[in-house]
Length: 315
Image 1 (cartoon, one colour):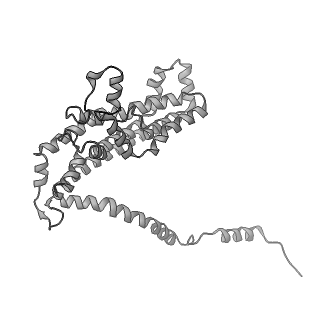
Image 2: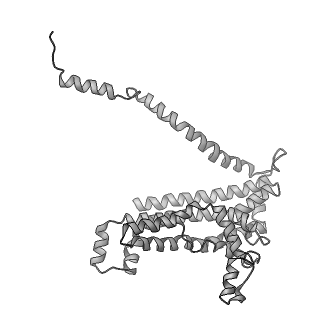
Image 3: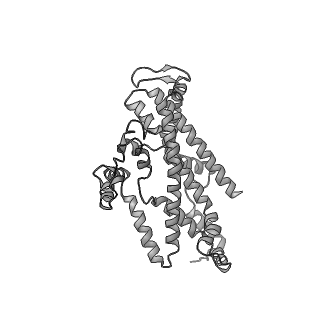
């Protein structure tokens, strides 16, 4: 029986036929399959992100109690917002929260990341990172309730002041309208956010070893190295965390809702909490949507600034 060895060309052709993926022969089929997989994601994004924003934009120009048909009122809701002392006060509260909270969100995590990064043992670095990341396990609601107990008149903070002999400093921290806003802003001591810590730590790890060696040869150690090398080279991480922190503060709802209910009075009311309050408690859904749309516009501006900042780093 006569037989012949397969030629190399025929072997390559057979391998291509075996390895050919379904739909690879027609680029349009491949694109349709890819878009088919992406379609559910697009549907969820449109349904749960873009449609509510569009609905809030339309509802912001109406008077609606949530049940009866809405009536068109034009710009009345926006005019009412900037004449509303509670809403204007909430803007001041979020401005103070931003001015105090942003440094607390950036500086302590950076210091902790620097301390971990300079530990010589990699095993010890892993241990310290794990200790801080374990805070992710604690739900935000539980953390807020713990700090509510700490701030109570018979809570941990006043008990500690009493033990230290500082009884004159004991207060009803979240029951005093002059102290409540500061108390809720300063909750979370020592203010080391695990997410921010990991972002800074990853940024420090990405610094090329050649730069660190050159800085050491030039005598840049300690604070000089941090000031001249580390801080400039984690600038992109700082910009990211800055924008995320500002957005987080502007959307802060859980802390005033669970800890103070916006009080005493309106001393801890934020725009997001006031938006929730006008809709759920006062049935002013049109007015609430106007507040929501203004917050959406503010967050959109911050997102655009974020994109421009990152583009300036890459140019």
